[in-house]
Image (cartoon, rainbow, N blue to C red; front, side, top):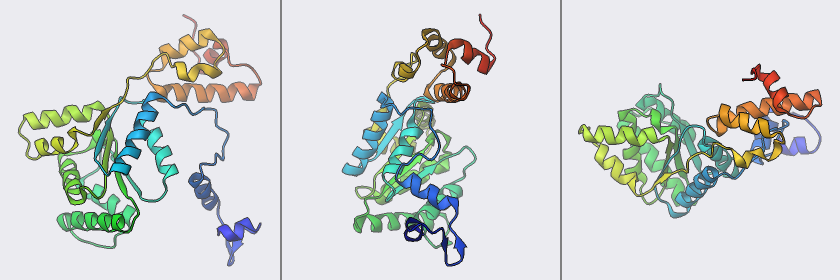
Length: 272
């Protein structure tokens, strides 16, 4: 497809090359297809997350990255995955995931053809990861939003960690609530929790608190009153992004400077 399209033709063997193909290429080379109104900033949390992921991969060591909601953990992970398209296996955990859901996602990522049951499936996953490491792929296994893990999922991660230790790094990313939940289960005597904590304790990284003045992001905001309003409205970088992206886009479409009055009009915020 790439060879054909680069020659200026967009049909291959009577099949039209769809937009999804070009979007995949754009994602692989970090090319922005749509106009972006949000400027990348190397926040403390972004640098901590990125450096920790690179360190885990280089040293083949486990890490647990914990930071408050909206501090940019997933954003940093997205960029890390985009910059490393080979060997990075990422699973985003949601609150509805069962143990089987997690295993199925790993099987899908690794393209393992098997219908084995849970125990055997775990061994297949670990074996495949070790084999890829031996072939020089430098795999890294990343679980995002781990605060959504159930007990069975936590125990499965412990089994995966044990199965690939010293060969494939396992990185967990989530909010501090995950650590609180682990400690609570350990104190209640839940089997395996003390061992799980021990495996990741030395590699735990606490991300810096969010700067709720948002100093690093205010360079494009000239109106001091708007800066103050944004600091009151947004609780984190994610919310700041949601407010600013829409406001900057609409200001550009109206060909007006982004002022506090225009911002209030866009979001129907009355003057106190």
